[in-house]
Length: 277
Image (cartoon, rainbow, N blue to C red; front, side):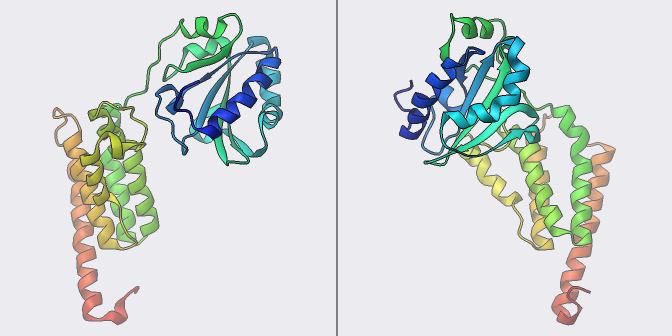
């Protein structure tokens, strides 16, 4: 165990590992995330990979809720399709409201991974051997993939602001931070490009600039935030990517929206009765 492991996490593992060891269909257990990077604190999730004999994957998968419930008092659990990982069971345990991710994986499949986990327990070194057959590769953002989409996204956001669908615009600005700006900032900082996770620590100066992309429920605020997102993206994208027809068109649409919103604001100031009309 890591010497810095918080008490709640240590207590869970002290109870769970012997229970999992008794299930002969399970080959080993490894911990990833902040456990593997030795950065765990009392707010951390516990990310566990449970390696399963290939012949028993179907039955173990069908029983994973019962397996999870046997490890500690289980408050709630659901599977991870929303993050593209149906093998994942996301759990909340009492009494410390501890978040534990249990990923049930066929033993040979552990070779395909985004990080190198720490093996907590295994049978006959088999989990370690399976991990050695592959190499961890964290997915990096593809600048061309982003560029091909970014200006359509800018146009979409601009149209939502023009129409007055401000909650939609605010949500889409959050999407741009998660899918575009955060990963590009984290890549520049040499960190894992996982949305905006831990960006305040990895790249504090650029993270502070992200504040300008957070909008209030106001058309002018949404416009300022979108302008800030565009400006930051143009600094972060590779220099070889120059202005395109899509970029020019999206920025022109944004300018038209800006003029329209400014005119509407002036009219509302002159005649408050026109507000919302």
